Image 1: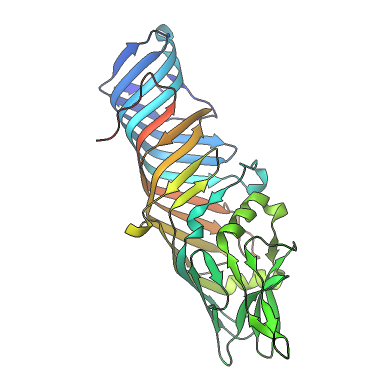
Image 2 (image 1 turned 60 degrees about the vertical axis):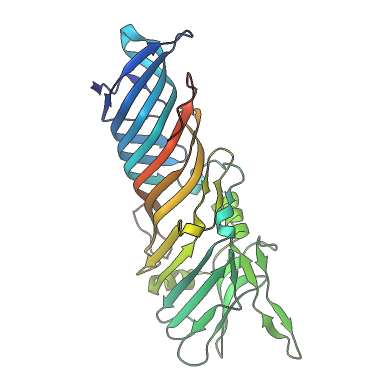
Length: 357
C-alpha cells in the first residue's frame, strides 16, 4: 500500500517523494499512541536538512519495521514518536556537510581509528619550489607520521622533510628551508619537534606528528582557531601541480562525539581501508572506502535519540578547493552507494525491536 507523504509530520523540513508499506498492522495502545507494524517500508526521494548539512537519499528500505505514532486516526495525521526496524538499507545517499564556520561545535570529537592507522601516501610535485619535480613517500605507522622515515626524492641530492617549532618544512640541499604548513600557535597538538645536535647544531631528528591528536585539535578549533595553515600563495599554487595516491587502514574505535558516533570495527579483517587519489590535488581529492564497517552507531534525528547495531557501507568523498584556485563546487561531498544497518531504534517504542537472527 502507498502512504501519502502528509501522513507523518517530521521536523527539520524533511521531504519525501513517496512511501510504500507492506504487511501493515495497526494496534491502538493504552497511552493513546498508535503502533504500526509493517513487513517493509520503502521511502523514496528523501531529503533532510539540518545545521550539520544536507542529505538526499534515493531509497530507504526498512525491514520488519515498527512505528509509534501519536495523533488522530480520523484526520490521518500523526506525529512520529518512535521508529524501529530489524534492518535498514540506504541507497544513493548524497551528503553535503555545512561549512565548518557555520556549524556549531558538537563538543569534543573523538577520532580513535586514526590513532591505530597504518598506510602509505605517495605525492608527486611537478616543478617543486625547492627543485624541479619531487617524489615524496610518507609512511604512517600507529597513527604517527615519523618524518625521519619520509623520503623526498628528485634529481640531485635528496631533500628532507620535518616538523619544527614554526612549521612543517622541506630542507633541500643548496636551496635552504621551505615552509609547507606554518604554525600559528606555540604548542601544536601531537607534534614532536625536530632536534639538533653535534658541532654544527645540525638536525639529528626530524620529529613526528601524532595524527589523531592533531586532527582532533583541528576539528575542535574550526577554521578560525586552526593551529596553522598553508604557508603562503606559492605553496597553495603548488597544490595545482601535485598529484597524490595512497592507502590508509583505519583502526577500530569511536568516531564522533557524545551526540553522534560510530564505533568502527574490522581492521583485522581488512575493513575500513581508504584509498586516496588526486590527479591535481589543488582541484579535487577523492577518498574511497569500499568496505566501511562499524559495530554500532548512536545519533540524533528529528529531535530523538537513535542507535543501531552493526553497520556496513560503501562510500566515497570528494574534497575540493585545496589549492589557490577557487571553485563553485561544494568543498566536501560524500556519496554513500549503499549502507546497511541492523537493529535500528529511534525515539520511544512500545516495546523493543526483536534482535536480528
